[in-house]
Image (tube, rainbow, N blue to C red; front, side, top):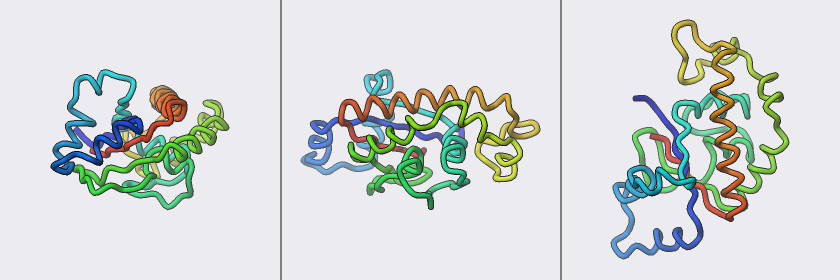
Length: 174
């Protein structure tokens, strides 16, 4: 299956409900909330970018990080940034971005065109950095870029809607 990254937009009302749960909120409850609710998964409040997470991070930051970023926000917040929660997944902790951080990300993303990303893409650099998931056979090629950009566009739209609605974004690697 591999490592996938999932995003959930949560409004202030639901944040309050989650944090005031009378029995506390354990990881099973949180996972069910963000990953196993058919209503949520089928809504525009949920986005799974699959295995494109590291490639998108690398395109935006030039960093080949796997679990935490050493680059500065706001672009580092798109995939590997945010504040860690106590909730552990198979591949790291769930993180979140506050509404003001989401807006900062959107402002930064609006400055980047798809042509900018195309011009920054280097199959050689992706292969040298061993960017996940390394396509087989032969590694990254220019053909993989277009499907990656399709995912990127969905991610930008997701962030824009979250900023418009003043939502938190939770990022779950798992």
